[in-house]
Length: 452
Ligand code: 5AD
Image 1 (cartoon, rainbow, N blue to C red):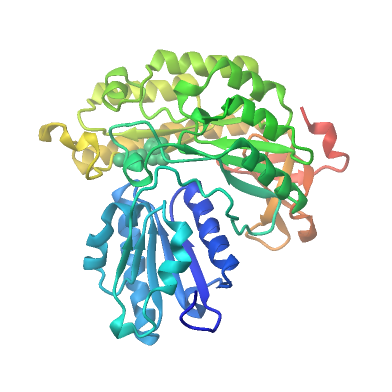
Image 2: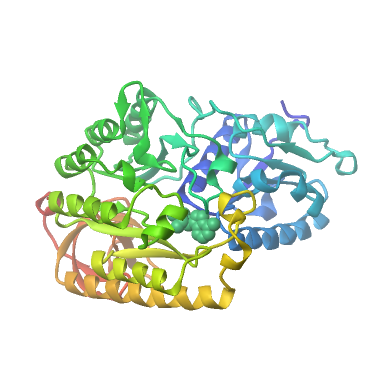
């Protein structure tokens, strides 16, 4: 396949969501299987792939900055291949090639199977190289049979679904990732068993609306149960669910299966019904609250997080206040907050021009929302000080001798300990909180004792 007989070195740099991180691992897996060497920085690479996000304008601007930086490398090494993959590549396509003439390849999220051919087909002589765009959406592509290249460790991202069938009016995802495509349950379970063999004990199931998964008579609650029961799997998470598919059956599986963590990320987007309707979210605030009540009744200790967009076109000040009211009412453990960002091609762009809210006003709303959500988070976390939690140690902390891990409820804890403990579970008492994370001490004794 290579025009050049020597082994090529590839560096993949990923921006954006967990699905993108997982796609980055997929690209590395596909290329490694073809004999490419994966390297850890662009200076060592023959091929640099920037795996991009299109969800907000800010994400795209960052990438454009980074790509022009990489052009500096290309001046030193004219043979260097620069590729842009992912959602921004899909969204901007040929425009991107025009704007950045030093970019050799743009490839959308459905075309990674052909990555080796695309790179192999680029001319070795930089002057004669033609720019290549591979952008077709493939309604069937779910990357069955291809292996991700994962870094070693106890936790793994596991895509079970790609694309999205919703049409939330603010969102670019359905246009850059196409319709929903689910992977077969057999394939998923086989992969989970393989991961366990490689030392993984925590998996996070990924999908754009992960809980709408359904294939071959297996729906999301079924799949979640089956994954949770794979021997060796100790923690299962999933992200991101859509509130409309949070059903009593799903909640039952979450409550019953020991491995399913007491954590749910539930994007609310707004606390106002008129806004939710214009976002085409397909639920009301009341229905959302009912779902949350159902979840909390079944799993009282559950940690809830959410996504909120402020200043959606037409959102009045009073409607924004409804979102603040929702925050006070639900008291999410954490919230990811965003200013509405116009995405070309999405339905919201067609709203009347006078509806669009100024940057300054949006910023003021965002800051108020962040204050409220951080305040609530700090209060909740302060109340948790003193608890003993099972922590899965993920990596070394910032300071020497420090370890960093997560509780089942997805809270970050740092504590002092032996660096060799990375990948293990330990009992940790939460001693203090910064508001966002915890500082703890290891408590001797069996970890099994703290499992619910
Ligand atoms: N503007 C701002 N935020 C957005 N999100 C998605 N699209 C937009 C947009 N156009 C947010 C939503 C989603 C999260 C991943 O990103 O809150 O849940």
